Image (cartoon, rainbow, N blue to C red; front, side, top):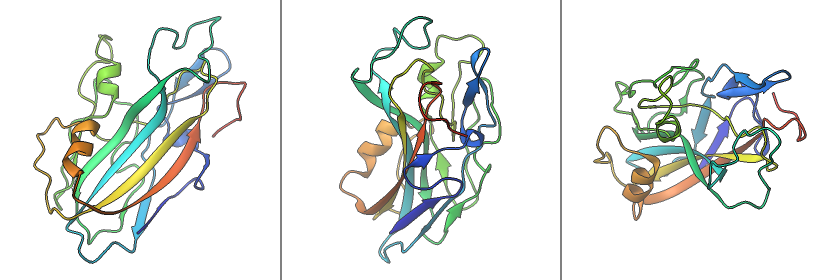
Length: 211
């Protein structure tokens, strides 16, 4: 099975069009277009009954204590954890792509509602749900895609991994408010094949420029 993401090569920088935030010379960051990229796949195994998609950032600091703080830097060796940017399930194996902007096209304060397409595809809660939990202007349930917004004072370049899973189940019995961790648990023992594509992003002006 193969997967590709239009707009950037595997292992290359993600354009700001697909990010939640982009660099700003005066205020460090500003909101961006936040469009989901176009994803295409092929050579899905014949026995596949459904597909699932996870996009996660594997480089998020374990502690938010020094995130975006003036005069402080997040050390490259600080412990890291996963942040889920996009999770989708029950994707028909007869489909071949998800189109640009179909799951996100702009910032939605308090989050987008869950997407349920006619072919049965469903989207779950991404990690912005937890990130904005204590912010009255932004808190809410964030379904579907919301793009990169790594700390602007982070010394590490963040890796965004888009992974498509071919499953032996036609439908995953997950509740409406399922998370990335729920999805990972549900697909254990049901994965026939998988394929990944990785993009890089940073808001630190000292690192390689993106978008």
